[in-house]
Image (cartoon, rainbow, N blue to C red; front, side):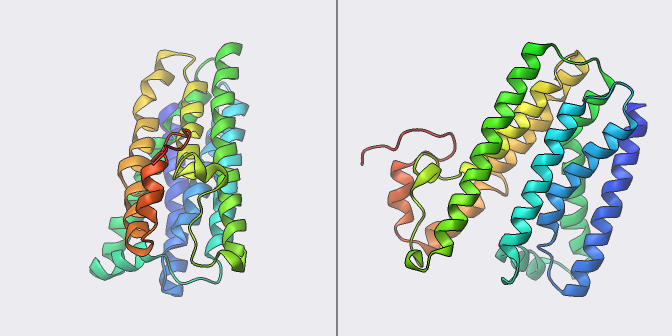
Length: 253
């Protein structure tokens, strides 16, 4: 039954990304896939819950809340702005739309399915004990608050004309240079904990590990900081006193 779930989830993600790809080709910009990233996780959670043999409503609902919130935030953030520089650079290095489909859409689809394994497996194992539910939900909540509040603080900062050209260094951004990435990492750690009722759930440990690795060493933190160091001379001083990922009190420089 789990393999059926995995196959149906893969089909649903393929349809979603195929639709996004067709729209993106027509629009001649491909950063819409960032919106589809969160929606894809919500879709997998919904499919898994619908097919579940032992439904775990909590893990599915928490995943859907996170995914939809992220998709809405990115959609609003990107509306009316030029295409994300990352996709502009990828398109310049790609040999046509088919190469782009393989390089971006297929890769993100496979990563999405792998990272979401704890959410899928949780629907086919017994419910976790209460203490594990409390622990997982608490970790998820910490991550969700950090990500949501961090994104909100940054959007409010950028919306103020007085802050044009300035660097965000207050609020949660005073304690970590990436409260949104830290929030993502905590969210998926919490979801993994909720799936650890049996060895099958615990065996999906590589799923949150991959997500955290991508945030810290892959397409998250490194690309963002590379751009910020080039465009904002004051970023180096900010980086010297502010934790790169895990929230910590700022250093005295």
